[in-house]
Length: 109
Image (cartoon, rainbow, N blue to C red; front, top):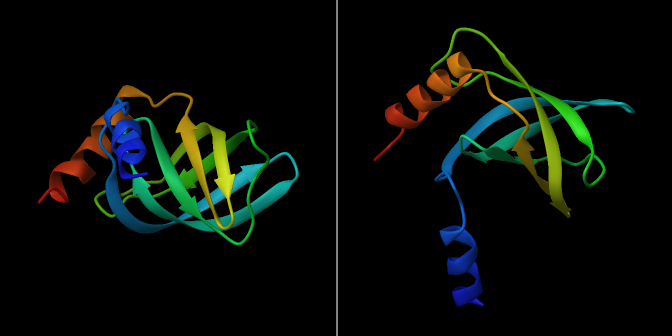
């Protein structure tokens, strides 16, 4: 099992960073809140007692602790298990990529 886990991490294009901040998930069926567990430039892991449908496109709103304004991004639900789900960002504008990188730099090590 550990070997499979290691292989899946090796396939990641961007490293994930642990975090703990509120997120708002907006779907075509409504909106709900969650907590970010980890984040990378390509996606985010969210914990919530609700979750969006697999493969659905959602709008995600959050504010990193290093930022003055919210980020709004479209994301795709890649998987969901129990009370967590993985989202892949559809696109981050250059300014938002820079802001997310600032968060990583401030929380690295």
